[in-house]
Figure 1 (cartoon, rainbow, N blue to C red):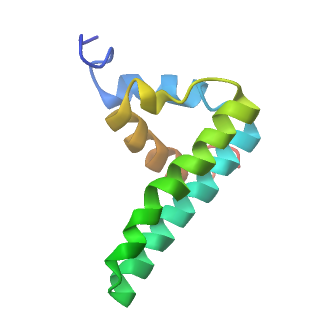
Figure 2 (cartoon, one colour):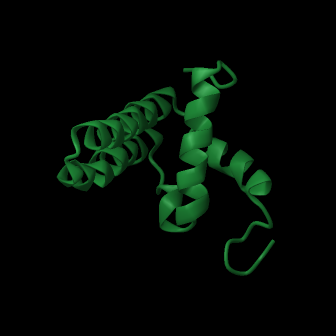
Length: 103
C-alpha cells in the first residue's frame, strides 16, 4: 500500500470499492447516476451546450451519495480515494452492464 492512496494499484482498490457497494439499491443508484453523467456529456457534445456539463457532478454524486447515506449506510469512497473511486464507478457500471455484477 502507498501512503497517498492506501492501495498500490486500482486492482487492489477495486475489491474494496465493491465491498462498499454491497447494497443492491446503492448499486442501482450509482448506475442511474452514471447513466445520467454519460447522457449529459453526450447531450452537451451533440448540442454544443457546454453549460450542461455543470449538471454532471450533481447527477453523478447526487445519486451515488443518496445510495451510500440512505441505503448502504456508509461514507462514499470518493471522500478518501477520489480518483480510484471515480474509476471504480465506471468499471462497476461496465461490470453491471455485462452481467459480471448483479444489477
